[in-house]
Length: 288
Image (cartoon, rainbow, N blue to C red):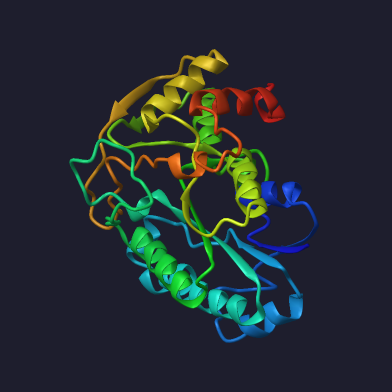
């Protein structure tokens, strides 16, 4: 089995590359650039893949509000070209999406299932939702995995670009920390999502699946828990989502139900607290 992983240098892609049971071809923007649609069919054909896993995305949520063309070029039109090329070459496509396809239902308090109607609040979420529809239209047997709040040790995010490490850096610097307490979701450990993805691929799953760690929290609750685990007592206060002009609106509730995934009898995704404790214990960056 020959796998291609687009976005292999990221938090999720780097974990997936380590878990796939076969030959793995890490793909960067140099091999397939989702902003350059015309070369994609030839690039996919030349790789001779059995499965292509797309972890690449334009994920600058705030910038997408003013860089709409770029967000859609990568997350929608680039995905369309990729899906069309995969279908033409007989390559199975695995594509990652986001909890931000939801959020329009302000009164929501129960986890979203795969059958719930989406309703994004920002350009990023809209571009990712468009990518889902286009992927399905061009590649009927596509596997779409929605996840949430990824953080991990490997890839670019493992070098300080994820929420957890940012919080710890600020705490150790003595910087006052204000974190929103009105956005509820399920932050998910990249290696856990990668393991679940390998399981879905192994059972030849198709369609849309939600894959996150268990339970849910606000970002403030996440920060409080990680400081507790690490024995840190920074100046942490809660705040509410702002409404500054040009800043993307976030969902107040975007918890995803993983019941459909669980029904397959694959690995059980651990609670977010257990995943966080494992991450903080295993990552050498925290042993200071």
